[in-house]
Image (cartoon, rainbow, N blue to C red; front, side, top):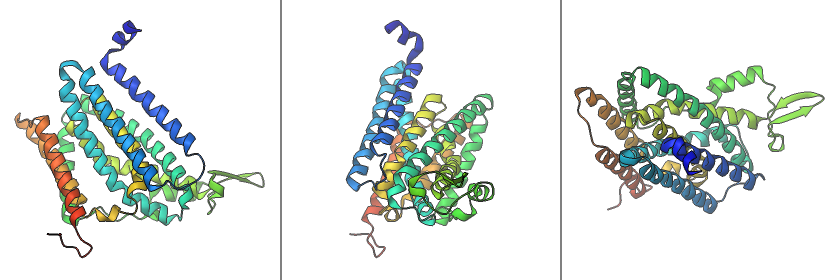
Amino acid sequence: MTDLLKDIGPDGLLYCIFIVVIVVSLMLDLGIFRKPKELSYSSAAIQSLIWVSLALAFGALIYFEEGVNGKEYALQYISAYLMEYSLSIDNIFVFVLILTFFKVSKEHYHKVLFWGILGAIVFRIIFILVGIVVVEKFHWVLYGFGVILIYTGYKILMSGSEPEVHPDQNIIYKFMKKYFNILPEEGGGKFVIRRDGKKYYSILFMVVAVLAGTDLVFAIDSIPAAFSISQHRMVVLTSNIFAVLGLRAMFFLLMGAVNKFDYLQQGISFVLMFIGIKMLIEIFDWHIPTELSLGIIILMLGSAIVLSLLKTKGGKLEE
């Protein structure tokens, strides 16, 4: 067994551990919460804590398993994870809009979020693998990512928010309305409904597809951000997937308070611009140490969250 693990190598072993953790966690999640019900605040808090703990524990494994590069890769992983996690918080507001637009019953939130996020994970893995091939063959693409991140950060900062989301204008929504037999009902929580020998799809099936597609749109910003932090395949892939996996629990934890993070957008915008600048200055062989980058990311996001929590309902900061 020891010889086999040696042959696999540190990266192979970490991939195996990552896959096992993800598969077991998803199986437990689907099995325990199979019955339709709304996830309580306390359960959401516990699950969020578990996902964050698993992600950080995996970072520790990277530190110990990657040898002389362990510290550097672990810091890159934590930096990418924090970036992706903060962007995932930003996604929650859009998810709330989608579920509200389709009038999904709260008892079905868990099911549609579970399958929607699972679909998003599949799309992201494909997106990341394609990105890895492109970056390895055309390294200059990273500088393009840097420009995109600076532009996106600046646009968010100037607008103060993400563009408005209209689910009825979603391309997946229009496609499914045209080519699928969609019934405007939840079908008792089922995705497929059979009536008079014909197969129909419930509105929940459409919601799952729209959620997965919407997350893929967010990935256009978040995945380049991860590549700008690290070009290590495992770091980019695992940090991204761990952040998305914790999104469902975070949804139930923050869905009633998501609008209270008034300054999170500004914090994210500064982080995106910082990462983009960090990427571009490497053209001149200037490198910002990973430890310093991680500290700056934590400072920016932490400040945005603290300021948001200090803000009163009247829009002023407490003394």
